[in-house]
Amino acid sequence: MSFSQMSIRQLQQALRDGKTSSVALTQACLERIAATDEQINAFVTVCGDEALAAAAEADRQIAAGQGGPLTGIPIAVKDIFNTAGVRTSCGSRILENYIAPYDATAFARLREQGAILLGKLNMDEFAMGSSNENSANGPVRNPWDLERVPGGSSGGSAAALASGQALATLGTDTGGSIRQPASFCGVVGVKPTYGRVSRYGVIAYASSLDQVGPLARCVEDAALMLGAVAGYDPADSTSVDCPVPDYLASLEAGVKGKKIGLPREYFIAGLDPAVKQAVEAAIEIYRNLGAEIVEVSLPHTDYAVACYYLIATAEASSNLARYDGVRFGVRHQGEGGLVQMYEQSRAAGFGDEVKRRIMLGTYALSSGYYDAYYLKAQKVRTLIRDDFLKAFEQVDLLLTPVSPTAAFKLGEKTADPLQMYLSDIFTIPVNLAGTCALSLPCGQDSELPIGLQLIGKPFDEATILQAARAFEAETEWHKKTPNI
Image 1 (tube, rainbow, N blue to C red):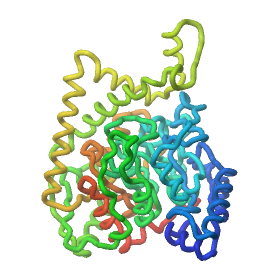
Image 2: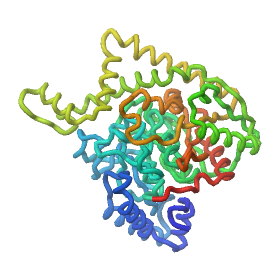
Image 3: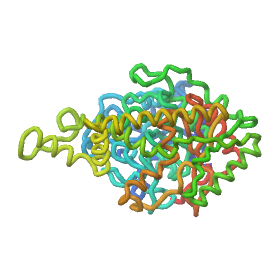
Image 4: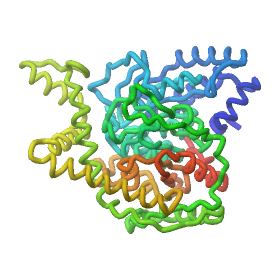
């Protein structure tokens, strides 16, 4: 069995038994990056020498019986996480030279537990996108089909994992940016409850929606990674002081006796036949495992996309105001005064999609339109959250598709932003409600992966991980890898 087919816990045991070393694991990942990333474009920064030095230190710790639960395991993180001494560009020209002086809390927790940083991963600029085509570093390509998108905005995090370049990755999810790439690339991706994982040190897109989460090759690894980064952080005012359970200890609890809800609004006429077939097959597996399948309703689902693109863009307009060429960002100084410098810096530094969302958000917040747009969207958001809470009074978790289709072709939707936005129709409501969800592989469409979404009650990540593990134990979809 190759390293890329082993779980993190299996690799931890191999490290302790002396069957491999962290240096060997790290070198294997770096060689894989060198062999495949010219095609995929998942990495924007590779920390080769630093990673090997850290791996050598990890081997010394393991030999001495020391180290943490991730000691010696090579991982990579989305280029939205501040990493001390390593460039953090957030996929944007305006931050192309930014080197953070400190680590984001989520990454710091991985480093404290011994993880080895291979590098930083490509992404849609400022996490704004559903295809990873909006990066100043060029698009990421799906390792299953290089002519297709990997999903966005954490496309690099999913593609690097699927292609064997890293053993686990971190991403962020504002409207589906972990789950949709996980679905398109055939890996597991977890969007935790808002407040479960610290956002401190993560460059903000929409502060009331952004959430940090892991991507992994199997549910066990996802549970391990989530346990490593979750927990209260006083540096983040939105972090919730809530106990973090041992996700691994309860992982094999199964679904017998659980009630799984199927929201009728998610099984729509526009659903791709292959996606519908894969999800229906998954439902039958859960039924055979002893779960009770119940139809539920989330009646305000139709308003979610419109609601999201008012709230998210309004918050983006506010958050991105700091990139002016003075306090943050590359300065473009031509002729003219201060105002011209602001205009030139932002015009040259931001890409088209970021500009579009800033303009939408600024308009929604402007005098005379605030009540009609932003305030009304917040009221609708409350109704959407209430829909989920009412559904969870009837069931233990919800089951839906992740996306209406498998991965689409590069360039297919770039000319039609509305069609691009609708690709997140099944993931956006979860962010608006602030609850937790995950994506796991459940089928294929002409060899392209299809993902299944499990949605849990607030702070009940344990239940959706248990349900995901029960499905994974009955299927082989998570073991399939792209031929690259």
